[in-house]
Length: 454
Ligand SMILES: Nc1ncnc2c1ncn2[C@@H]1O[C@H](COP(=O)(O)OP(=O)(O)O)[C@@H](O)[C@H]1O
Ligand SMILES: [Mg+2]
Image 1 (cartoon, protein in one colour):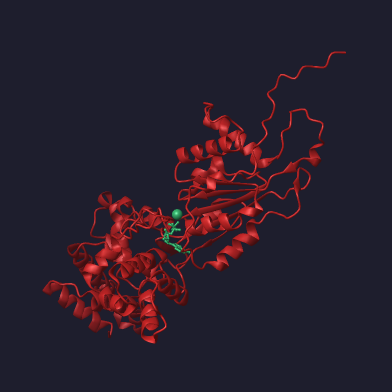
Image 2: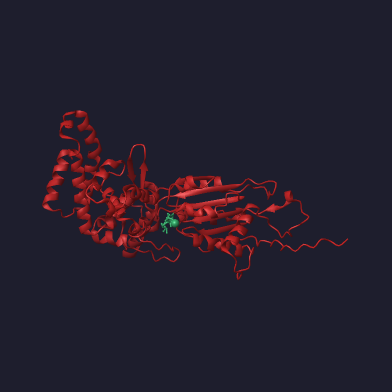
């Protein structure tokens, strides 16, 4: 009897190993530290040692690295992917900051794996489905649709996919390989990406710790830290820079370029000219394709007016506990239609990891690095204006309660607890930057300090 003809197209054999998408993000020869995070990534993402087959899979392993721009998420992803490349048969790097980029990334995967021809003009949804299917059952060899190999014996490839810059994690919805058998690493500014993507482990990446930052700065600036004075200066300087990798890299480059020693740099650092140099510096080194300067890294120009005003207000306050009630007082002056809603503004700052919000306490926290960066990008005029606003705001907090309530010591004590840390903080900003204040603001500032016993 004639065999039944099979007209369905044969399933194409994937081209493995497939790691060419890793070539695009350049490896940084100066990569430093982060060993704890790398260990965590290894533990969560590492594929099993035994060969994977249809009958022996363990689903999707995923990790989400969150944190504000420039804190080092992409560097870690590049380093992990390169140092653990031997564990995987295929590694895919996908830019995730837009649906078009995601679709392009999936097309590149299909082409690199040779699941489609490069010139093939197929519907992006079909291509995405072809890739998703392979990620779910990542067979290694060529198999005709009705093959004789038992399903359970088909060997699977071990793959890693990196979604870089998934700042709007909801865009990943159609591209997230939830039923995949492999490892996914995501970088995102939005801390909620950890919650949004299942099943995901994750963390909020912080700048370098004090000692670590000092080592990094010393190494990059090739300074001779053998002299005690210099190592002390390195520690103080890296501390001032808040351990923020991007600033440390820029400051080290300035030290090298100007042939300064650490002590000179520390002395010059408070000078406004150098400040501005750091904040507009672009690293010309060939390995580092990072295009942001400190003045652009947080994309503050994309924020709404209200979000920017709030961030500029927060930049002068004690970073560890900012009562939202104080900020809301700031809004009373502005017509809401002009500035948009407070909730939207705070959400946009939180989803860029520029602030953290504690919903129960109704308090915000902000990283010192973000405060300093925000202050440094302000013009002198805007700085002075914002300074005056914050002084006024803090002073008003004292008088916000009805007069008679102040007869209760407890009320006084509560207000002092809320306002004093901010008064102390704005004084330290004043001591460092010494803005030229109007007589009216100077008087208000003096009253604020006096009232708070600063
Ligand atoms: N671990 C690190 N070692 C060396 N340089 C780093 C490290 N982390 C960050 N950097 C520097 O900071 C820049 C920004 O880091 P990146 O990972 O791109 O930030 P993010 O992805 O969080 O926006 C890098 O281009 C690099 O110069
Ligand atoms: Mg990045």
